[in-house]
Amino acid sequence: MAEIVSKQAAYVAAGTKKQRPVMGGGEKKCIVITSPDTAAWAQNDTIASPVLIPKGSRFLCDTFVSHADMGTSITLDIGIRAATTAATVIDADGICAALDVASAAARAAANNGALVKDGVEYVTTQDSYVYATLGGGTPTANAQIRIEVSVMFP
Image (cartoon, rainbow, N blue to C red; front, side, top):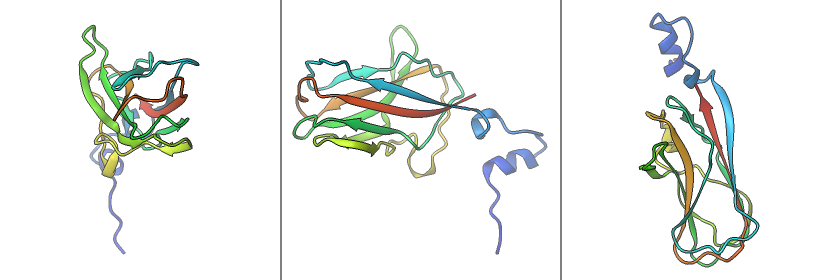
């Protein structure tokens, strides 16, 4: 049986003595976003983390969401935006796209966004922040949500 050479092994075999941290040897951090105790949610409201994600970081596939019943037809997108004054959106649903949060869930996987699904190896090209958007209607007032996004820092 043949062995398939990983990207990491090919990088080392090409003459580099060690992997870049983002390739698998960096520091794993978990960015947590928790809703306030009271929130008068409205459709398309966002909630963000203040944790700066440095350029050269990689999102991992173990992002999870724990939440109360957010209301009929409510969905959650998790994305990233630039760490600039304008906070330009880089990808609004790159980590998680349209996760159904209508019914309460103790822990739901949130890793179907274009930056992490299907074996994608996305590395940030600029400093950024994680943020989430609740859409599909008006979420239940004061409904609680916690988002945990894993990132490999360089």
